[in-house]
Amino acid sequence: MTAKRPRICVIVNPVSGVQRTALDDITNYFAAQQTHEYEICVTERGGDARRFAQQAVARQVDVVAAYGGDGTMMEVAEGLRESSVPMAFLPGGTANVMAIELGIPTDLSAALDLALNPTHQVRVIDIGCVDNQYFLLRSGLGYEAEFSAGAARGAKSKSGRLAYVMNAIRKLRDMRPVRYVITIDGEIHVQRGITCMICNSTSIGVPNLRLVSASDVSDGLLDVIVIHNVRPGTIIGLVIDILRGILPGAKSRGTQNTHWQGREVTVTMNRRQLVARDGEPLKRAKRISAHIVPQALRVIVPATTLETSVEHLDRDQAAV
Ligand SMILES: [Mg+2]
Image (cartoon, rainbow, N blue to C red; front, side, top):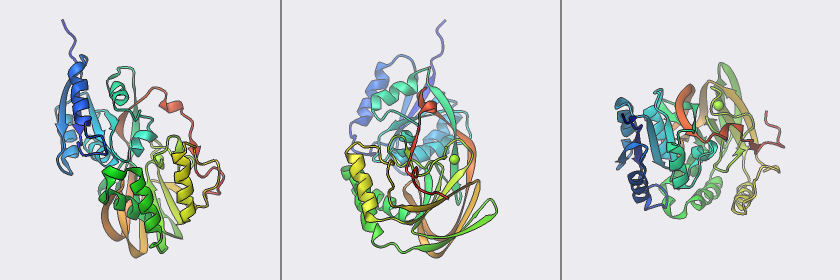
């Protein structure tokens, strides 16, 4: 008797990033492998990835793999949320921050190998929620929302990471600090800043580098960060280090920030600010509330990820 082959549903966002031939590559890969039954769902518009993931859960597939950037991953994660079906990341967008956070290979065929490898590990991670909208990475208010949303609307597929950097510098000129009143698990904090980030992951898309120490996508806590100011030189310096292949974080970035952790967060602002989740604009608002959904998503990771050491941007800064 032949053993039943595991079933994998592959959700592909064909317009992610610059990899126009990815759909062909993925189709050819699955046609050649013998281990899994597969189906490939191609997204056409926002919401498709979430719906395909929900339908795959209803069909009781064994794995759902997602090809795309952080926006696609967020949708698929939302569709798989609180199910037992593990998610495999196939990084293919301009920004693949969550895949980097989880130690997923950036090479497509290596990521596919991982998804199908029976010895991979399954890690259970948290998901964040802001005003009934889920996020995998973070919800940004103010500056973070402005620059990431600006990059998303611009020539994202052509200029990739450079689009983020150009927007980051351009938007910085226009930002005025606002007063944030932040309630975290009942405690009130008041801070002025140009951006407030409510994070599940504090990864910034560079391997082993995070915005703050002690952040963990499996600890059941949100990391709340207010950045009081950013100098243009901070961004430029960071980019130069990344382009030169140097791991930043060994020196101060000249950024002043404050950091807390908690489960339930509300933020009120004295002026309306743009709110984004995982780099996609949601709305302008003067008040938002967010919470963590602990242990909400099963993700396929390489066997070694759990032991990886992590450098921190705030290593020589006084995070409060
Ligand atoms: Mg956490």
